Length: 447
Image 1 (cartoon, helix red, strand yellow):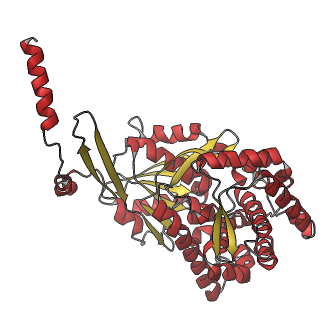
Image 2 (cartoon, rainbow, N blue to C red):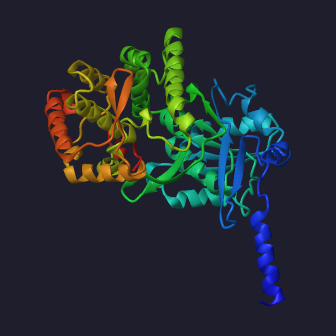
Image 3 (tube, rainbow, N blue to C red):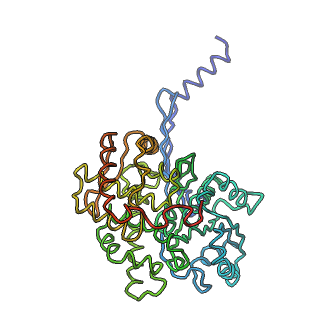
């Protein structure tokens, strides 16, 4: 054996005997000094195996996210945004085109009066714009040839559910993780898409098929922004409140039964509303957000499938783009069908199913559409969702009562078909056979 080979063998043997333990306290001691952002933290361990040929790594990622109800966020005397951006020397914002038309002047005046430079990209965000091309457009604005945002500089996103999804995804890609502050201008964005960690864009005939887990560091919910929403958008967003009422909060359900239509008519207590309704509106928003984030926020990376907030979202991601339904109406159909399915399975009684459907129809949400009679499409939807949720089961959340739910691991084809037939029969007795008001994207000019 040559001296070189002999030396190499000796080195390898010494490496095998070496102590490869790593003291994680070293990382903790230097955490504040080396952290890339005040909102993100992490820990890790590395363990060597005695044979000197492998080692194991485990790591955890910690983030801080806040949801805050704020009144009149664009009032120059309101300190919320100024406190975030004053010390950073500027605000980089992505603003929905319609929001810019309605509130752009107020937004620019806010930052001008607070002496904070504003660099804003105005972006149309219809459902047809929920594409990778829109994400790339936003990335170009955030990147080095645009505003060149820093890795710890929170981008301000102002818009509805589509913009929160695509702009949030762009932030997740920029520097691999750029923080952002979300102001939802619609109920869908305020209650659901805005605070959610699931940023996304649409895939081919499957809604939200491409994305990343990247929640905003702060979600601001300003109910006064709902004043300018068309009633169709108010109604559309109500589905996200109802899903949490059905699966998690019976008090919220009762509030929606009593006040739901008035909240639609008054644009969430912004027009011709009394003090009582204003308090109800705030309670409804808070309860819906709390129920949603209680499950979504504590399961940020969807490592578990006990997710009540997926109620109404099992079959709808497949049939929504095919039928060109508004998202809330597709969810309404999904929730109502899910209630009938739960009835067929013996999870709820007929009176509970009827209350769920009646709540949806009382505010004009769809509860039935012929698209669900397409068995092949529904089964393909189940296949897609099973893959999305980890292939171990369908894990469809279904009500077990008003304010509680369970999770169906599988729905066999014969059960699916019989439930569709029963739901069709039941909805035939409803006014309009379960058809909603302004249920299609074309109804609100969003195709």
